[in-house]
Image (cartoon, rainbow, N blue to C red; front, side, top):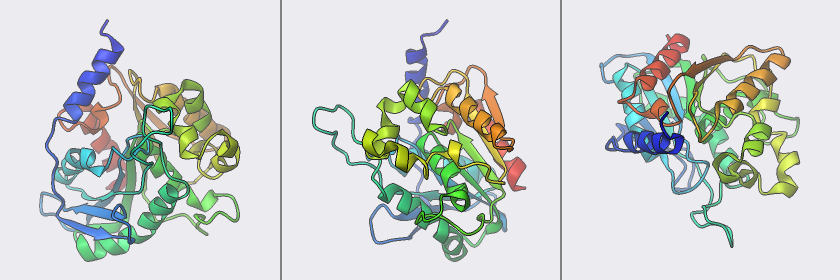
Length: 289
């Protein structure tokens, strides 16, 4: 029986071993240096290809930016997709006093940025990625980025008065969330990413009020096709989090697809050399094509 921590470390090393892939174009959706979207054209030269909007993970913490996701988005481009990889503001690079890890997220800037990027991405794609077909847009994201993808797709069901609320659903074919932090309550119980969820929302005093507009498990039903892909051996975001989200969706009257991959941890989902990555591409294709 392999040691879970050792396997996770090996899977992470494999996923991060691939060289970064430069985008074909980059466009800003705001004035901050992190408010940018990278565009990757389909490598087969196809036109009117489905547009995949990707959100990277990293526990909403500053040291983890979109660069580590570039091999994955290039993998999707080589599969014939047009891809938009979104950057957004994350938590400070330094830990709280007495802490050991950088702080997760900025309130409200992390959510401001994702909302602004999703509002702008189709127009930006029209200008910088003319091969993309915005009528066939799929959101995807890994880990904390999976949370943000689920949240972005649910903005039309945010509480009244939320600055991020949309009057109607965005034009999406669906969401494929990869090991997402999709159920805040369960993630907090399990201590996912060293308390990152609580930090994202500004601490325990703010948690309840802010979770009401940011926790995907309470923003249901969305009416948007949603699939969660999860490794059963994931020790970073355990599959119990995904199961709790799927259960919450069922109680809300919505069916969420849950693909559990045996013998797979957290990082193979975005590792182009792993079989799990091909499964992810197929899940996206089922919604997009």
